[in-house]
Image (cartoon, rainbow, N blue to C red; front, side, top):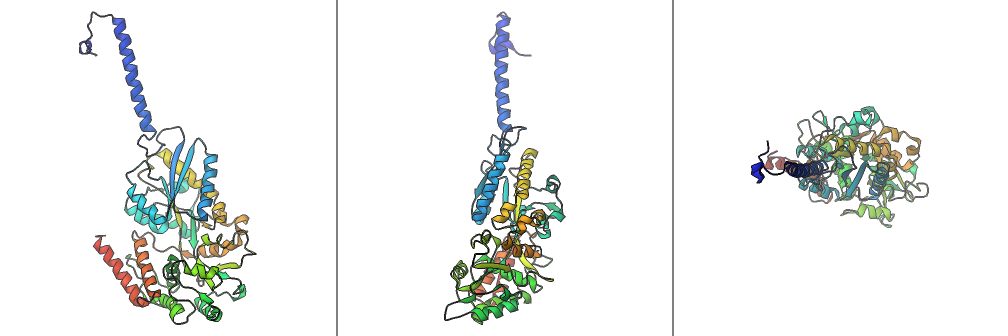
Length: 447
């Protein structure tokens, strides 16, 4: 019961006037309460606009696709936004990969700018799970209506950690061997590393300044070449206890081979820094260049393969009966701090499904989609320059990416490769130092 006297209202006053004022006051209160509830339901804190049952949802999608592949992704996002106008809108932010991962951790509590979807390398997923940043997405396969058989096996399984799925594959990107058609014919291409050395020795000409292969000391692709050779030799990056073991005999032999290309056989110049290998290859001063499929458009191999003076073939040892190579995979992940309701999650799945179904556009940007349905299509097969990457992708090894410190250990390995090729330390010493440094890093951080 309302205490009229508390409002300074006497019983003797006109009851009709009192009731009119009470109804008006209660209506105002109800309106204010409704406004507050609607504001909260629409994400009044800026974290998302997806808590309600209607209205357009805005999803923030972060990625590191800053090259030509980024242009292709932007086009697919535009098409998606057009098709789902009024329902879902995806806003994409592109940035350098290292910047992206730094910002993910610093925006964890800043929900007004934090992303809902992040594309990341499979090697980063376990580390992000350890930081409690990723949302489990065990139901995504059933929602998308797909199974393991629909995808390249290694790309499918890499996102499953301790029985839970935290990422879903977009592509797989192996390293392949580009070659200068002005310096070598297709019939001369090597299939093994022994043949590779022989061809490099034959083609190296000090008088003209042409080398077989410029071995870069400061570029990530060199450590991927090393990792591939390590796997081909029967070695591994980590053992069953997640201890780094790339300083094994197989690892030492692989790194010794790369160093010998520079210092023993002279088929590579010394002190090739970041980008130096590309410059020499582009200017016709080296026969071979190693990189991922994203370089296909840089060499005009998607649209004008027949007229381009560059060809591409599988990396030595990567295909065939016992072929294997180290590879990476871009994966979709959902952030646990922003995807907090079913409607947002369903919207994220809708976007991921759309990109999967339209990933032929991703292929034309110089990527190998993980979905076999795309790889088996006639239109995809007509992109001849992608086929060496595709063949390699089916036999690729993504490493022990379920190990939460895989990425850090992989980077210590990269330092070892760089130090050896720069002649700072010998191959064995360099690898031993890297394994010890990584072990100390684990201990020092209390992991």
